[in-house]
Length: 187
Image (cartoon, rainbow, N blue to C red; front, top):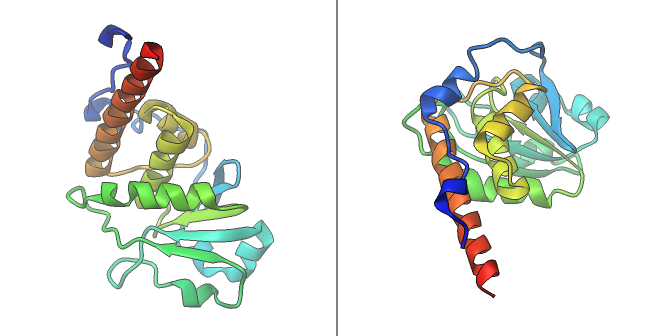
């Protein structure tokens, strides 16, 4: 069985926050491709249907669904387009439990056959958090690797509470991988 000493340690939240303190070469734009067929965008991008058609977007994940400080789209907004829609009512507050949406959002992104736009109001916190969770869950990236990868492609800034939840996800995923490795080695 693999020794716990070989487990990659998940950094503290303060370290994850410090990753955003240094500048990035990426300029803020309304939408960026951050992974093959995965885009993070803002409210303007989500509301601009011709632009979505031009990008070839076939799936939209709205991480800011709802009435207050959110983006008022929905499945009906895209009814004249061939777009699959998934909405998440998430508040961009450190106390909000966004982790409840990690699995369904990751599954929606993963099962999309073409291009997915994941958006919120600014495309920096809620949507970025869900994309980071997707990369961690479906592509086995660590929280640090996921952040570094996306930061090279888009200006993101998940809030403190969301980083805490991503850190907890990283620890859980590492433990699951260690258990799976141990089970495979015993067989």
